[in-house]
Amino acid sequence: MTPRTATVAIVGAGPAGLVLAHALRRAGVDAAVHERLSRAELEATARAGVLEHRVVEYLRALGLADRLAAEGERHGRCEISCLGERVVVDYGALSGGVRHWVYPQQLLVRDLIAAYERDGGTIAFGSPVLAVAPDRAGHPVLRTAGGELRARYAVGCDGARGVVAAAFPDGAAGPERRYPYDWLTVLARIDRPVAAVRYAVHADGYAGMMPRTADVGRFYLEVPAGERVEGWPPDRIRAELVRRLGRGGGDPRPGELLETGVLRMRGRVARRMRHGRLLLAGDAAHTVTPSGAKGLNSAVADAADLAGALLAELRAQGGGGEGGGAALEGYQERRLAAAWRTQEFSDRLLDLLHLPAGLPPEQREFALRLRLERIRRIARPGPEAAEFARAYAGAGELPAAGVWPPAQRAAVASCATGR
Ligand code: PHB
Image (cartoon, rainbow, N blue to C red; front, side, top):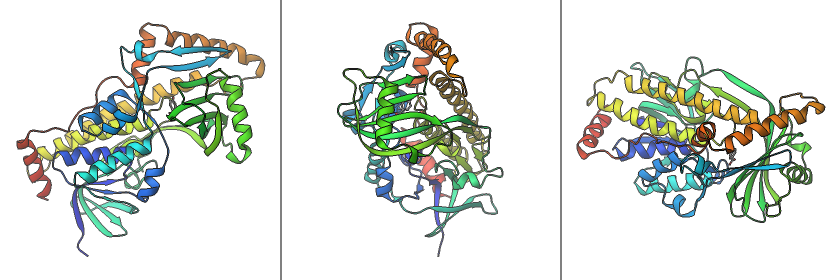
């Protein structure tokens, strides 16, 4: 069988892989996208749902946000309850107008796939990449069930423990932290929409209530590390949610539980996101806890940056020569720095939302009282609140690589196909 070839092989068709594929395609660079899951499985996997301002602006510039803008909801306030007080953080105002969009990840993935196919692209669903190894020239060769795929670059957008990371000499290892608690995760029917993200800081553990769609909400409960979901029948989950979240008159009530699980809370950043012609983006390079909703957003930010870096590298190769890798090193440097900023933000929010591990009951009120001070500080106009609000909502811009003048497109397209 003759091996297939592509300029860029993308492993994983989640948000990072799809955004990268789109951005490359717009510049005339061919990508081969392989996804382990079937299309139906991928499009049904409910995960994140809160998109940062800068991510949506980037998608909009690529023409990929039409349905999101029509059907998504803008959110600029969250609520944090503690010791019976419910503090509203109007981060939209505190940040000077930066807000989130609420739009379920699986709908975004559907939109990105549909648009990619409309543009003439194809995605190999149900087609895992089994292994990646360099050939003698250092170009990646990917082994799939359908034969070999040879590419100039291979990008792992395939989540933690992905196959591209496994081809790094150190397996893309890096510093990590296992938190001393887990989050029970729940997708539940609700009788009215979640109007704002709610965090409850509670003596018995954190609880969260997050918007998804008009009749489905995402809920979280802090549980001891290593907890199993079997110990949590639906009635216990519902009762504990209501108890920790508090019962406001207009609050949605969790009804039928559609999905439950336990999320092992950990943070991790690989030491490297590039090894030669192998690159990593999103969860393949870093794991962040859900706190602050940064996982999906930082994955798309990686993809946006990497698209620009790959195009710069291909251009520097000038139709066949070697591009030195400076643009790809730049990608790694910028995105590792960003990954640590994200970890610090999520860790800081976690610290606010949880009491210290093992705190005896008689000391919990004191710890809660301190947290209430911190909550008030990020809700009250001032430099700290503005910094929190801008980081939370994703102020700023992602680098746009989407729109190129025709001459540049032609130059990159010819060097991309001249392997
Ligand atoms: C979520 O939508 O799942 C979410 C939102 C905000 C958070 C954490 C999770 O801080």
